[in-house]
Length: 179
Image (tube, rainbow, N blue to C red):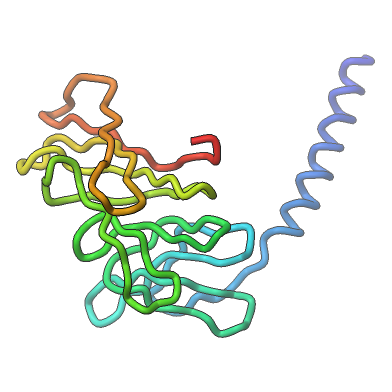
């Protein structure tokens, strides 16, 4: 009986702590019609996209009420770190977006010059991961560590091997602050 009482007490404490944290950290913001959120940083800045005139635009939403919502250009913003650095994809593939909305977005390149890439995550140290196609047939997508300078020294992180339906795919979707 003692184990059951300990279990029930633990469950109540967990629910109480979890319930309070959910209530404290989940305010709801209306980002507007035809918009979506992909990431939020510890400063409350949200990135995602807005569908405008038949095209996706990467967008920075600032729900603090300061009115700094910004169109970052064509594409989609996947992640924002606590320094306000934003990554996703733009018209030329993987992109480090200009957080001022001034259009000085940086193309992060691809692997081996093949045409497609997406940056999925950026940590607080500025390290960026995502994926890039490794051939023109689009049958080999590879997890990638992008060079944040845009200098083209992107690193292929490989796969675990094998093919499924003639495709060989790996995608890095997140990176922690330890790299």
